[in-house]
Image 1 (cartoon, helix red, strand yellow):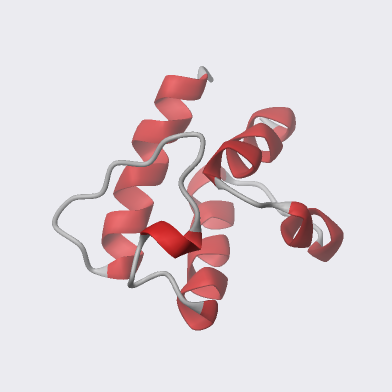
Image 2: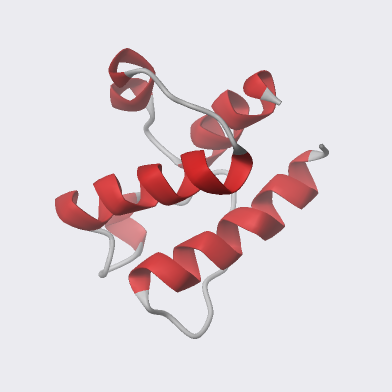
Length: 79
């Protein structure tokens, strides 16, 4: 799966979980950029991403992410 397709699917997941009409994620997007992305919604996002892509992340992996680009790197490596 290409990065652009991963970003497209992530946009849909973020909109669904965070109850947003629209969100535009890019490599540098972080929780600081989206008001609705707090610690609780972060967990909900991880669960939805794992389910949506049919993958599992380790806790060690998750805590290293500083932005969506790093999240996409992890997703791409598992697909």
